[in-house]
Length: 344
Ligand SMILES: NC(=O)c1ccc[n+]([C@@H]2O[C@H](COP(=O)([O-])OP(=O)(O)OC[C@H]3O[C@@H](n4cnc5c(N)ncnc54)[C@H](O)[C@@H]3O)[C@@H](O)[C@H]2O)c1
Image (cartoon, rainbow, N blue to C red; front, side, top):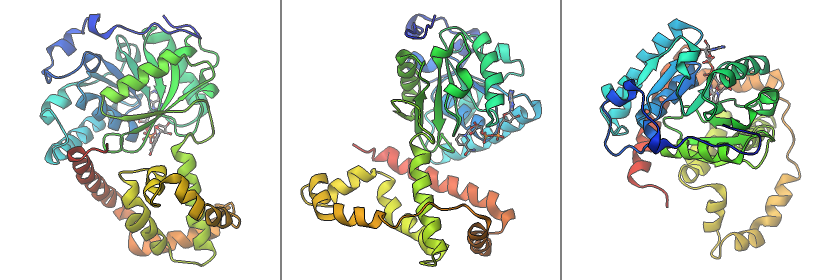
């Protein structure tokens, strides 16, 4: 049972598995946590990707969507992605075994009946999140963690009135989470520390990289960093300093090569012989002066249209899907490389 300050979470080792999960073939190396069922609510772009994450890790997954056609389509999509992941050596079990762990469940009560965690992925409006969390809090076992994939909404905006609000939090993935492992955990003011710790452990056991915020802030961590980068890219373009293609190269053939395996703090720690303090004493003043003419980008239609014209000259709108599939295959190759040579 969970109260505002205390959460008594399940004891995985002693918990009986459902008949369905006990019957599933799975790797002997799975931990007891990985054998516990997880519900994924909302089977759109992000929900179906989460189903891959949890099933790949060994969890029996209950995949629920308000639209039955979406659920059926998501299974076909997941089957294709599992084949690709297997081709890149990114699955520990055969694709058919991973797929068999996912069950589409049109009845929400059945989907969340005996789960250790619910990962919610429905549309991004406060009213929708309030409505679904009210149902989830009433239907899920009292010790299940309720995590929302929301990109921008703090959990305090949709969980305040719930009796079980202490087990609610944001678990914000990066698209697609089966290839980009970062998950941002953000508590509401009333989220129990144990719920945060439990979610952290479940994501980590599933092969994700959880990071925890101390409290709510607009945009969490990733979208704040991304917003600052986008702000400066658009501003440089709007000022006529470089083409959109050249600004993209600054990241893809410059900063982001290092950033794909080390963060900005780690990067500057290596960019001066004696580390961060040395970097700051050499380049801190120049960095501060550079910031003095940084402006907030308007996101106005005119500069957006100019960037769009340049992008459309390189990629037609109807080719975006194919290019996204290409991106995901490149991410798979990168994930396979990082798997062989994990960061220390
Ligand atoms: N798209 C991204 O890149 C991205 C990245 C990180 C987080 N997110 C977050 O993930 C969430 C889902 O985004 P998405 O891109 O997958 O959206 P989506 O539109 O692709 O999928 C939403 C799904 O929710 C279903 N749905 C709506 N109401 C429902 C209900 N009451 N019960 C059950 N199912 C319901 C819809 O039928 C749809 O299939 C959002 O909160 C979004 O902010 C998205």
